[in-house]
Image (cartoon, rainbow, N blue to C red; front, top):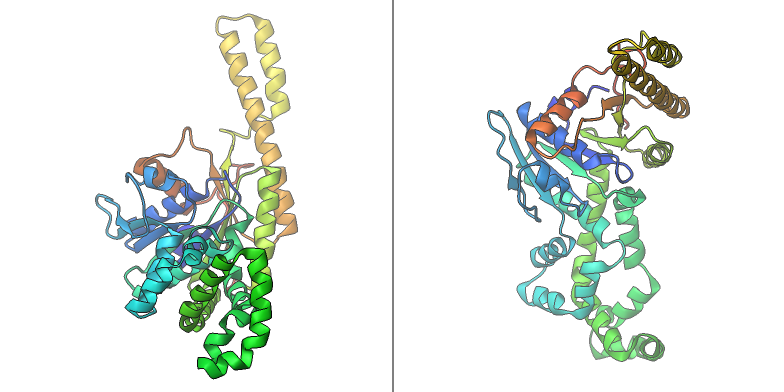
Length: 390
């Protein structure tokens, strides 16, 4: 998988990194963003993961809802980073797409305050909204998205449909009926049914909550169409040429099962998949000596009792363990590629320690974008990008 060519290509505008938790997805996103800036791109990396690792690795004290510049000495491009704040993004949408009076009503509404902070699906919709905003500004020629560390990482693909189901739901239609009908005549038209509905819901939710919801829906009614339209536009943007999805995993059964889920889901949605980054692999220093032969040699050296026998035997056993580990990892990779033969795989060796600064990100970026090596043979291998969909 030629990630170096992908991020340097001016036609590539969005890269979405997804995968399960603990596989190095945030670090991969940051390393790709740094490599892109050093390749001359104007790039912003957006994390939806609330963890602070991205800020730390980029040398920033904190990240917020606005892109912050990252100092990359000598880079011909630019690098910015940000972390999604779903409530602030929702507030910005309300202010931008309504009158000042209507925006004040919505922002002060208790139901809106709860919805914008913790309602299921709000984060995913706001991720779509923020991505659409970043793309619309044309300020950056590459956007890299670091998704949440779980299967919900791809839930933002459901945002347009979820928004449509919400807006077209029976309760929303009942709550907006008086406002849509207009005036006293409208209230007479829908009054009987709405009053019965109101009394039932009031007993369940409480009168004040129902009034808050009704006021919120009435105030937000003029924005509904824009919400749905923008979410749909961003969804379609993710399917067009210029966008690539990168699935990140480690050579472990659970992580690769999750990677298979992501690959299947992206295929179902018709999203362009660049391939799989298999992170934290353990290629041996040499494949000339098998694990079995190394173990036998270690026993023979230890029995010889020479001056450096203990040290030599220990080194041979370490090599044997590394060979056995590399073999297990290769078997897992082969199992994945057998199930998904069309998906290119990029292997990245495990770092000696945590990647926590630009120097570490630069090393990882070189592993991601340089010539790929085969963990089993140590020889370079070349894989081609899949054809674009659509």
